[in-house]
Image 1: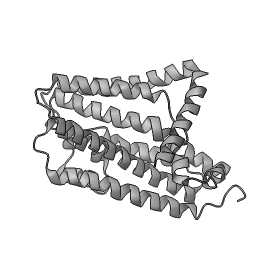
Image 2: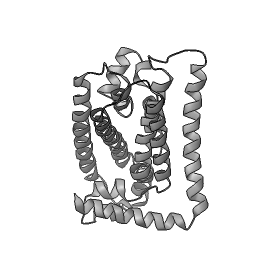
Image 3: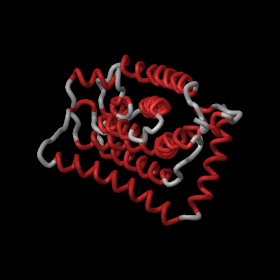
Image 4: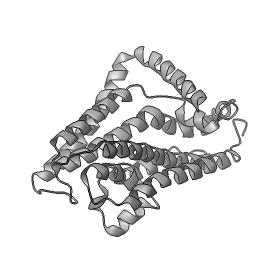
Length: 263
């Protein structure tokens, strides 16, 4: 594990050196994501002008939810997302050959080779926004809640990685499947809203089959919803292990059907 951590640090430093050569691109990428944050915040703030709560969430609760969403998204953008969007190109061009023949895990090489350095600033912005949400909340938070919140954020990120892994694996069979990311992005829209706004049947689906609620809704509930059950928390942590295990197995199985650049 430490070996892979050192390798990722090397990847990050390599990407950092490249980004510093194009500082305007670095700043622009940061501003684009901040603009996206602003759109999400503005959307709910407009709604709160006409109603005191949305799906049972008050304004401070929604701020905590959005802060959680931004943090998970920031981690994903920094470590995983760039690689996910590149993957269909690897399959089409045959560049995937260079990843599966390295003396390290193909899964690690494919999904962690390129780091989005600009997203470090986005992640710091997201953390600051969450701290603001906690500050304006009337709830009193314990150290245990904060620790559990951190664990669930990590598990939510792992679940997001698992979903991207499955989508990328499918592109191996379809070969020219750049649109597969757009399917994932459409599903990801459900994670951008608190699960409580959906019907009970959809909530159950987003906690089991398509675990969109586990990306941000469940972790955020630890901070603003005292009625959250132990069963949901345990399932979130267990689901992260099950989903990433199943996704990596599916990815490795899919590689058996990759024909390489010679096809």
